[in-house]
Length: 280
Image (cartoon, rainbow, N blue to C red):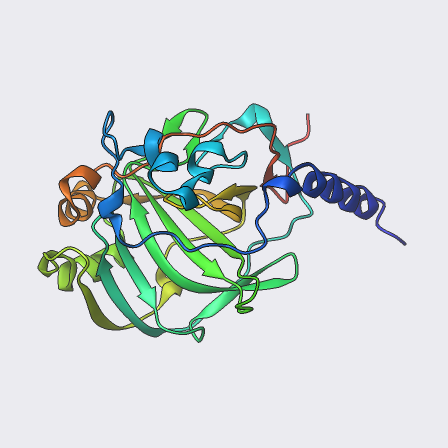
């Protein structure tokens, strides 16, 4: 028996892609690692409201129609029980810890660490970094911390990016962050310093993937390139106040609160994967 929902889903996807095809770049530019040209200070000439004016190639930060982060409002969410559980395939792999000035990033070397599959395409894990407070919000609420796990396709000619996000609220310490902070983070005092931290297993990050949000957006730092597939775990994990403090104190003073302001939705669809939606 054919699945009657499949043609409707394909039609919906085609319409969605058509509506926003003008925003999609042919290639995806990487986020800027040298943060000296921008900051997060309200009212600053290098602040978020001026990112799009600083460099020509950062124009999306001002003129883009699919910018991130956004508010994941319940009244805008479309429940999609057929999207499928988020499946990850990871293994321990060599990593470095880098203080990028505007955030702290764990970077895995090569593609051997593993990937996730979205719409039949494999996205390989490259790095993870934190924003405090969270950049995305749920019904107007921002959380204490947000992790971004950045993934890329292997084709160098048409590089595509998918980011998986995870929210934290104050509570019990996070074991994965503890492993990084206790042995390495405190000692990285020079901004832009990168240090080998040995084998790190990303599977230790507390992501569930049984319910998640998905939408089309952008990088949240310059050049704010669009065409990024965002997947945000609906489960909220915990982090201690001390851990948030360590992540904030390690970066430049202007980036202690390194969350870009919420961006307009512009009629984009926010999907929510829920295999067992409530029936009224």
